[in-house]
Amino acid sequence: MVIYLRMTTHAAWSLTTGSIEMARPDESPTSRTAVVPSDQPDEPTIIHDLSLDGSLGGPAIDVRSLDLAGDAVIVTDLDGTIVDVNDAFVRVTGYSRQEAIGQTPRLLSSGFQDKAFYADLWDTVTSGRVWEGELIDRHRDGTLHTYHATISPVKDSAGRVTHFVAVERDISGELERRGAPGSAGLIHSDLTGSCVYANRRAATLFGAEPTALLGRGLLEALDPDDAAQFREVVGRVAETGRTHRLDVRTRQAGGGLLHVDLAPLTVSSGKTIGAVGSIEDLSERVAVHRELDRRDALIESVLDALPDEVAVAADDGTLLAVNRAWRAARGQAPEDAILAARVGDDVEAHARRGAEGGDQHAAALLEELHRRRTTGNDAGVTVTGEPSGSGATGGYAITPLAWDDGGYVLRRVTDT
Image 1 (tube, one colour):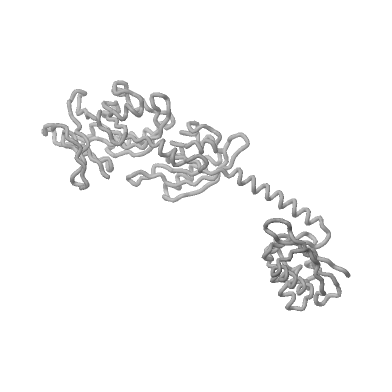
Image 2 (cartoon, rainbow, N blue to C red; image 1 turned 180 degrees about the horizontal axis):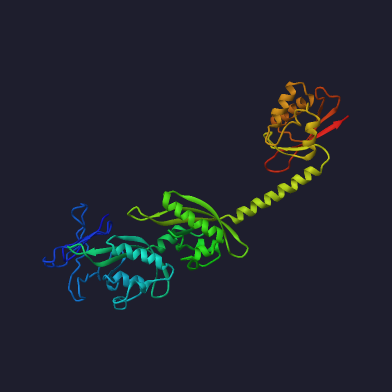
């Protein structure tokens, strides 16, 4: 819903567009008006009258009792000096009106956003445009909070900027709720890769406190090469408006590998102000893959140590592994259809082709595999026969694998 404020100068302010138009100087102020909700765009909801008393050397805007769903409102003059704040500002920051008035918004500065960031903000509002983005503020008690802020220039009837009005909403709690314990970590960064928010899960993944990741802390927690890549991908996300993914290494003791999904962080105007990142720990997954690779290497070395031709097949007949002797015999006995099978091939398909060509080894094996499937009998057995064109006798020994996924081991048996 678009919310408008009516000032005693008959001005209307849209919090959606940030546009403010002052009435003519010769119009006299009116009394405060009550709340009048409306669904019609040409009949704005009047929240509060803003008075002009001239006591501060210019049009002072009275916002003390203005409460926009708990949003803090700050009014400054052209030099950035605070001339008024609302009651919500006092409640959320812990600073009294007396402490705030006469100061600049640097009163809330956390030190995590650099001079270039504030220079861009100041250039935007002093040129008469609305600035919208995320700020890291430090409250009176020292706690850090992430705010979504809209800063609008106030113009008089001649189009001159006279004041700036900032509306800030604390989004720290909302962002924390999005990242429940055990879920992926959540971060927000600006367009330079500086972190403006990190939830506890993200901090845990980096082995740090959430505040340690703010500002340049996130980039400093990454391997230098990956920090440069992170900044590059943030820029790509902002430029393309699409999600991008990358894996990054952390600098914590023992190292860590994280997977990051970065999506555009946009504001109500549609402008992209940075990136929002979802972070997952890849270290455990990598450790599992390494363990599986180690076991595969062990199994392969055991198979290669066997002098007989040996292969391992899944229940469906897919060949999973063969040893060195099997691969060597393939060239020595090209007439053997079973030996011709390679990893990934269907052993039964090879046996069927061999049987059709008169290979008795293949026919016997195919018959036994069919019997095992139809009867459920998976006892070890040796099948024999005579391959076509060969004087050798023998066959294949079939030994079931004793594990949940089933399967069997084929061992070539020869008797010349």
